[in-house]
Image (tube, rainbow, N blue to C red; front, side, top):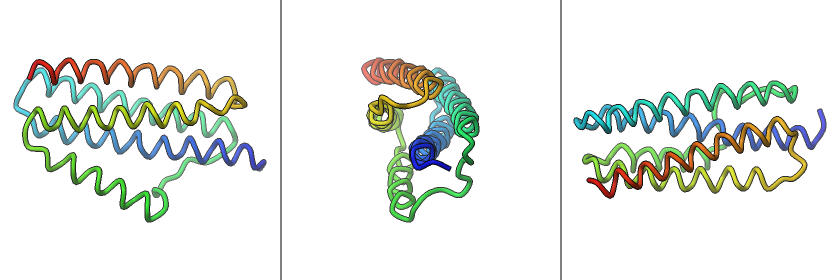
Length: 149
């Protein structure tokens, strides 16, 4: 296994973990709202993140690598736990939307960081660009929803 391929795989695995974190967060938000529109929105975003995860797994496999099944280092696990704790403690729609905005902004930055590697395989660049564009569209939608709440 080349060091380059392992490095790309590591970056994709980090995105995969965060994608599944977002999926779980959106599921929890769906469970915590009584607003039918928000419930539908959060449910769709959770399904989108599940699809993103499957796509990332496929891309990692196409590089001849394995996707992580158990999570990452203890520090990343702690950070994830703290993010989830903040997300799960949100007990009103506005707080959940604010947390979704924060999470989506962080996701866009993480995608941009990975995409800054100009030597990524074309298939990886295409996939990550498509996913990042969807996350940016989601971010705009969440901001619009927050303005309405």
